[in-house]
Image (tube, helix red, strand yellow):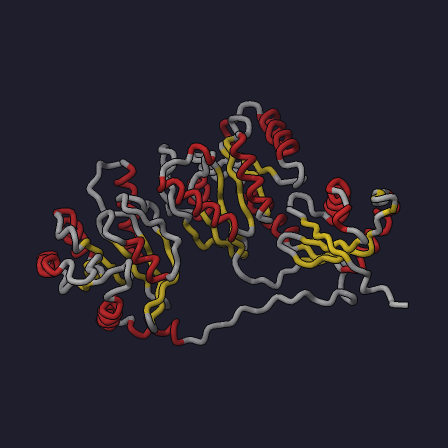
Length: 474
């Protein structure tokens, strides 16, 4: 059993800075502008010998019912209800404000265990606020500086005392005391006596699936529908999502991690610093994903920016699925599908066969097909082909279309082997690799796709100079 902590407080008191400090990451977007965090972000956190689950939340604000700020407040309340201990953060520089008093009263009524943190107490800053904080009725405030790491030993003591009071002290230390499992080293197997083609499924970690696209494409709505709960903020406003939020998810016995990302606009239009941080976060989500689901608005032809994002995914070597969202509102479905396929053919020709799945994220239609496509594309992404089978395949390919001439001599391709999966990557050994034209590599890659079922995933070809090590030396 792990202990869950929620960080709450009004906007711009340093909640995300504290989250980053305790998780040892820079995943939560931090800025001086208030109200940057909107969705609640979860992560594993550590403090000395303690280990716990930490939730970063949006700033608590009084807001009109139904507004975006009101929906953010509801998400924060869900986090408090889920947490074993709540960390209420105040700004020691600004002093105690009416909103601090209001929300401290609400948290006291909730009955949750609370630790009051007075952030931004660098040096002697905030001494007066520490005295004022007693009026909140939450006991002695813990002075700290999340930005500089000051006061964490006091937070450690407060957490241990609070956990002891509610009977969770052992759980707070149990995870850290347990021996950590070492990551298993992935070694390329000897394939001489194995199958010709197989799926390298030794990686048992959850399949990280990033939902990406332009703003207001329904990414958070799709994630909520897959999860079966209103876990992420949604609404008619464009650009609601800011942080990339990772959520555990299970589909027919397979463990996934859904990553909801911010909308990615054209680079020339991104001028605001917060939006630049949002886009950087989304790009990082692509880099660490195994599968990327690119959301399109099926009611209109694919946008140029959609193809820019798709190329970014394939350049990173990630598996790609196109989700044609809002399919229930499409009048001419055949025309819409043709438009998407034509655009992929012209703008993403280097990755033939990218699956296109019509869905309705709001109503949950087509999600079975989407997850089936995710399973299939993940297997293709992990395909491994034995060296013997590759070279038996290579021989007729060279006979059907010999390598071109260079400097009056025929280029010689000696042999081929697969060096890694995820994506499938091959090494081609030739007499003069620098002279092999790109068109000939496309010919070989196209043959690999057709003959080994690698449609829709990036395939990489590395050129090497050398002799065939499988050929006996004379």
